[in-house]
Amino acid sequence: MFTGIIQRVGEVLRLERDGEAGRLVIAVEPAFDRAIELGESIAVNGTCLTVAGVESGGFVFDVLAETFDKTSLGALEPGGRVNLELALAMGDPLGGHLVTGHVDETGRVLAIEQVDRDWKFRFGVSDEMLPLLVKKGSIAIDGTSLTVAELHEDGFSVHIIPHTFAETLFGVYAVGRRVNLEADLLGKYVQRIMEQGGASVYRGDGAS
Image (cartoon, rainbow, N blue to C red; front, side):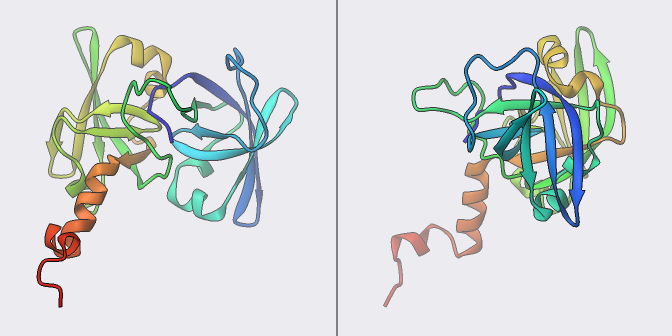
């Protein structure tokens, strides 16, 4: 579990494809504040990956075919930058919102506009994603916890402060770029409950 507060921006050293799966190697500079153990989880652009090894100053991650299908990781190239966050430990502050690292889909940057010192980014999403978005609700974009500022027929907008622009990938986004999106976990549970017949199903109303 993560909270969507980016701790480092790493650099892609290598992406190797082995059939539909593959292996990703990422360098982190400066290093994390503590030693990283094999088997730990790190969110890479919002995607929960397991540290499989360390080589040439980088962390090695095995990437499943499904992960390549559901995320933008397959488009990474050597020298590219990625948002990184270590998994939460008990007692860590929840600076953003609860983020699982299980990407729902990829969206695209539709527009970027500077507004005074801040920036407004508009993203396009699928029809399936739209019902999970709520104005002033939370969403993770490439692992960054953000607040939905506006809803549109084809997506949503967020406002980015200078700190977030400088310390995450938002500073390198361009129109057309694919990004990993994860909707708020609470919204997904509510949607599931409603699809199953609402709260009465879980109260046992009408059960024989």
